[in-house]
Image (cartoon, rainbow, N blue to C red; front, top):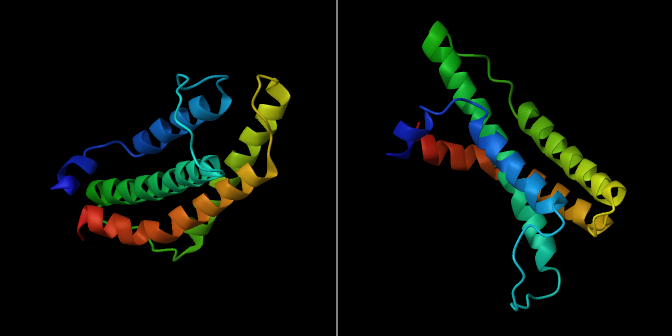
Length: 142
């Protein structure tokens, strides 16, 4: 059922939405309204891992949607390059996380540049890339 809607999307749309959300949540001085909910220590690291895991997953999904669109146009299936594209996706998402941490320090808007945030970004990116083949197969039901 979900496949019917996903294959209609232009490749890159999902990743673009996730990138905009990450930029807003990480670079805006106060992206969410203040509340009195106290979270456990390290909750922000889990949020970082989830954001960048989602980014890696949507990049991998957009890559598959692009391959499917290419197949529909040419009737030739693009060559499978194994796990290498997933590794590149994970590295790109990790580097994006590092760039955001550096921007947070440079912008001086009250957001801090933390090494452990970068580690959480990397862990999320590599985890998201690792589970994306299974999730994409389930979503697209091939």
